[in-house]
Image (cartoon, rainbow, N blue to C red; front, side, top):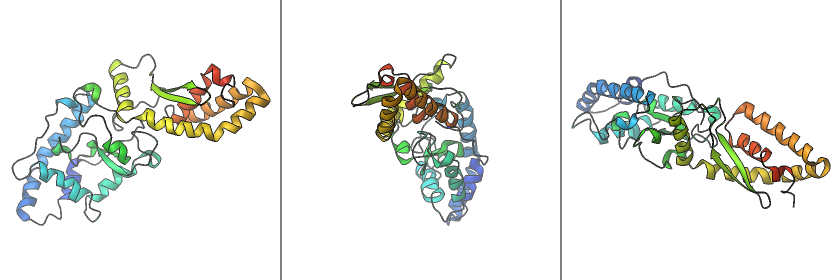
Length: 280
C-alpha cells in the first residue's frame, strides 16, 4: 500500500460543483441546503478514521425524503463521473494522485477508477466526500472481502491515513525450487502495534495480494531463470547471492513492500534456492 497526500479540497467544494448544473430549481435548492449535513458526515468520517472506528458510523443515512439515498448516489454516478460536469475536475485530481499512476491499494496495477473506501450504497452521505474516494484499479474497487468494516480490524489500509512504507511487512518464501513455487505473506516487525498488524493482514487478504503477486513473481523467475542458472553454474552460490542481494537492495530503495522487493528477499532466504536447487 502506498501513501498519498490527502486531497486539499473538501466535500463542500466537490458537492457544490456537482450540483451547479441541476436543472430543477427546487431540487438544486434542496441539495444546496443539505451541504451542512454532508459536511458533518465528512468531519465524522475524518475523526473516526483517525481512531479506526469507522464501523461506528451509522449506515443508510440520507438527508431527507428529497435528498435521499438514491439522490445522493446519483451525485456521484450522474454528476462527478460526468466529464461535462464541473465536478469532474475533482474526480480527475483524485485519480491523478495515484503514485506513478499505480493503484495504491495493490501497488501494482493501473489506477483506472475511484474506490469508495466506505461504499456509497451503505454510506450515501459520503458519496462524493474526497476523503472517502481513493484512486484504484477496477478489480481492487470491486473485489474487497467485505463491503464495509464490522470492526476496527476490517478497516483496510487507507492511502490518506496509513503510512506503512517505512518498515518491511511484505515477505515471500520459496515453497519449491523445481518446479518453482513461491508464496507471499505478511510479517510486520516487532514494535508495530497489534491493530495495525491485523489491518495489514486484512488488507493483504481482502485484496487477494498473494494471488496477484505470485503471478508476477512466477513470471519474473521465468524471465531471469537463464541468467540465474548461468551465474550459479559459473560462479557458484556466492555469485548467485551477490546478484540477488544487489537486486534486493536496488528494489528496496524504491519500495520496501513491493512484490519485487519481497521476491528477491524470499530467494535470498531460501537455502535450497541459493544452493542451486532451481537449476534444471
